[in-house]
Image (cartoon, rainbow, N blue to C red):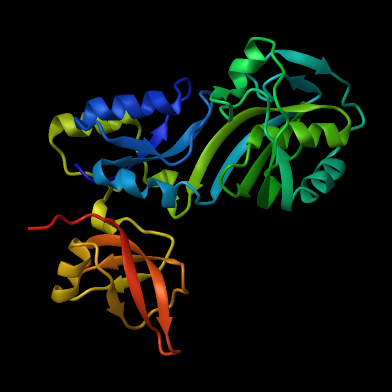
Length: 305
């Protein structure tokens, strides 16, 4: 367990950085990153990149995410979730399932989303939440996101609603809850959140860090919560290199490939004939219409002899 992905089922209370730090101690590996943060109160899937897999983080972090959680209506907080201070309370006597479901449907699609004041987004090297806590003005910035699915998982009860959300990376679920409450005129905040999926990775294949530590102590073989380096799925096509091309790749030289489905400028995964990941490259040129092209290695993993 030196290079690969560790699928963690995050416990509530700690930050994503806390999980990374503990994973470093458990695995004895300093080079560990993560593919998308979870707020301290949130639970669920946290994908950690380990060893040389950290060089793949940039490709994995942009994967779509799937969540389940609960929204509480009638109460707004400054952080848009249950961890914040209450800033407004309004009656919800006229709120019903039909109104809420209609409003949920209106959020599906591509839109601009404003980042919450209490977020890790930075301006001039300072995080938004640092400015907010010090009473300084927080810039208003928006980002294009896409919500693929937003639906109720049950009936509205005692002012709370269970929901499921599928969205692009970078979507603030807290902001979705806050904006939904504003649209309904009663205010709302995110009461709980659990991440179920990051790209092709699912929380049912993850393990808590307590369990990982226990299994490591027993010397047990890794389970589905460990994805070996060569088995990491990447969000672009694979091209295969022969032995001669492998040497060119190791020296950062271009290779000519056939059966190419990627377009010029696209990323490709370059493997050898044993499916070992050699490099990530980009298509520098397409030659004709027969799937022939030139690939330039950009990130080389194998070492030169």
